[in-house]
Length: 406
Image (cartoon, rainbow, N blue to C red; front, side):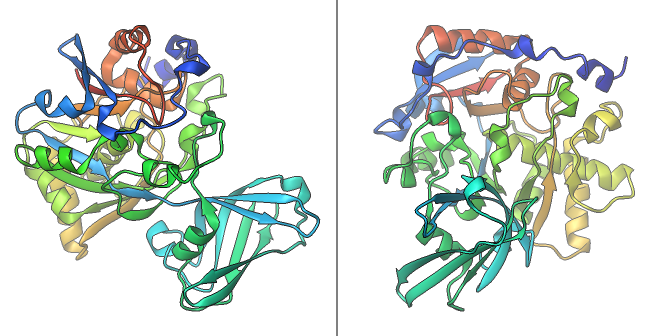
């Protein structure tokens, strides 16, 4: 039985645990680094606080952070009838599908969106809002370009203002649906990492919410720190509904990695600690792009959902060789940064090629992220989650943290 045949028989109920509503952290703690930290190392569990994380990281390890910045992706309009319409930005379409460039577009753009109260917004209706800006009054309109696919054109009557500023003026923080509350002013800075830089995520890389400038400074004294960008999509919250987990529709997310980071990954032999599952997906995907460059004919950085399993985990290039291939590709094409996207689906049976340790929050049962954790820890994921539940840890996006060193 091959890997995909085994995966098709995964029983999702085996990755269930009872998560009661009172265990979900609805609000952040007053101090970021005062969250609790469950350390799993060599099959032993320690209960600490996040500000103590520097004492438990492997000596001279390398931490990889996702520096994506959450945009206020929930945009609200009000019709003359009084009906409220929410437009949730998902991914850009025109004039460019690349998030970083799409945020800088001026005058008009088209995005794929989710629509709240959609039945009250007819295909022929135009929604309008007005804002006062430093450039004067701005009129923003929204119209369907494809009603069936929820493709929305935004247009504004100012040729100076980029779309990112329009979103900042209009939008609200896109809190996860399981928080069951509206965003507050406090959420604007708190549902964002202190090192966020590149706008485009519609969900936070929540493992990074615990870091402070002080912790980052302390880490830099004895560990290598590198960043990459994966713009987290709303699909990260999409539950697995398919009976066969392989049929789950994995969301595609855009990745950007600087040449200096690729050079580092090609050279280092030290343990690599991913800060968050988004960093895991980025690092492992970049490795598989190197495999494609070495073994396949494709030169496009797009990792399909099941590519690692279809390729297999035997006779693979080393981490060094794979990233060296990526580096050579970048040099040949005179690229300062690597751009691509990934649908990679990591579940039990996956063999990690890059990541040696993981800093992450506690995830929803029976989710794609829960499967990733189970792939990383094996059956010991149950020990970690039982310890967290029994010791009253706070769960999900605003919850407590863990350092996993299998």
